[in-house]
Image (cartoon, rainbow, N blue to C red; front, side, top):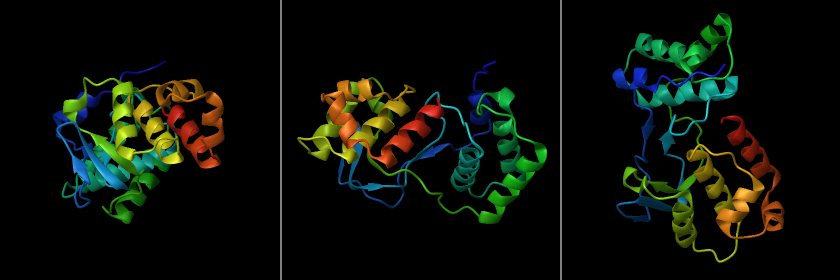
Length: 205
């Protein structure tokens, strides 16, 4: 049985779930996007798509991000948030987690401290003003910004992230259509790392 994500519960408590880069400066910025020539790891956007949390590792990462974004909040406040998200009935995760396992995970998060968790690198971050743009429009902007005439792993990975952000499953056919190349070209550029990332992103949907 599926459950709708109770995101309003977090919003009512003013839980911060996203942030733009705080020290990395964009190489180019418009009303629609920020572009980072060398990429940035300082962009966190939790629960932006329909993807749910499917593994313990991902759940702990979400806890670490929430602790970092909500630095200054009490441990009891954060623990309440963590336990709400870990409850399958609230629509954030796809699995049940034993109380002892969850207790240990929460304690590990508190012991680690509110340092910025490891994050995916992004080159293009779209602003809220870009929401009317279609996925194809966004990828067209990405292609122009990256400035490559031919497909490379950087552009392919960005396309995968953008598809995932839209809450859609990543397929070779969809990648080929959006990047205007053949499926064979996608296969040729899909290294083991990208294949693994594609699988992880799809499993979260």
